[in-house]
Length: 480
Image (cartoon, rainbow, N blue to C red; front, side, top):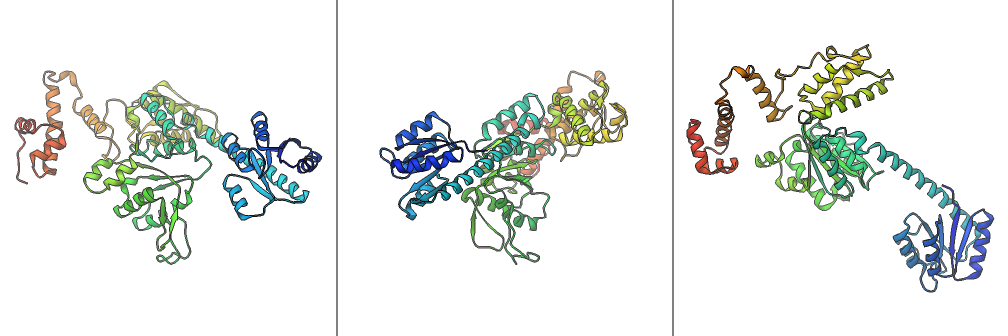
């Protein structure tokens, strides 16, 4: 970014003349002001690349003018001139946001060097600004998180509301729903764009190594620690740290995460010195943290500090309307990455994909599309290319950790109620409810050691209602 227009403000006419002549000889357009107020008026009317201001001027000092410039034109670089070579002036000028300062009298070579340095700084700033814009465009929510369902529209709105703040976010959802993608969208649409985004999976790192990964370690802190190591929090300074699967974090480390949230500092393993960090925390989990809090496996105080703004991602089976758009997105992206001609799906293949329950969510869908594209030589993918998927009406094998309770119940009902037209429809609702309600109440009673008052409170029903259900459902009571 080349410098073109410079403002010089000084109450000494001789200084204005010398600087104007020297700068114009270099090809710059130069405007002159003999006091701070005139300089402010020129800045309000024109666009400048650099302002060279005397520190002492009538009406408004150079430092006061610098404050006004910072308020209205933060990208204008300012050099302060002072006849007093005191540390106080230098410190005050830099503290208020001056790019540099020079002491009178000075050689014109000094001005040449400063102008050249300012030119390089503006060029770098322009490149950084362009890079930030490219990053922001690359990570625009609508480009990277696919879906127009009501559930996804709600997510987009939340991201838009919270991105520019430094508020702590807790993203919840099953594995494969895109929690890290949402975390990245929050970071790259925030004021921390251009700063580090550091992700760490708390469940993937052995327990005894997780602390040093998060907080760093000093040399000799443990066997194999041959040198000082920065932790993820230090690496993410000024940026965002994404703590994935935080529900699996050991309790002792949870206390240290809470300290980071409260004190904004970390201590390396084996160290004694606190290190200040300015980091935004975005956490994610596929677990029910409230349940883990009740089981005393997750700190309640940390849960409430993380859960300032909760974002819950719906599983793919609950937003099936998004599946065709996701399929086309992954299909186009895979073909582009592999440098092969575009492929399409038959309507029957798309219908099969839309009916599948996708226990692995978006990640499973993406891998399924990749596999089909790689293995098929045809430009049109058919049902045969997705041989592993089950058609509608058949129970899909799911494990409890892969699917929600609702999905498991739905799959079981599909299996049990095959041939529904032959069933007695007069009591099917009551029978199904009994079979779901009986194990639920029995489970809660067992957890509360058969204390009916506590069980009723957990279930959210009246104690007399619970007593009636125990009788009607023929639940055998045991002593706690």
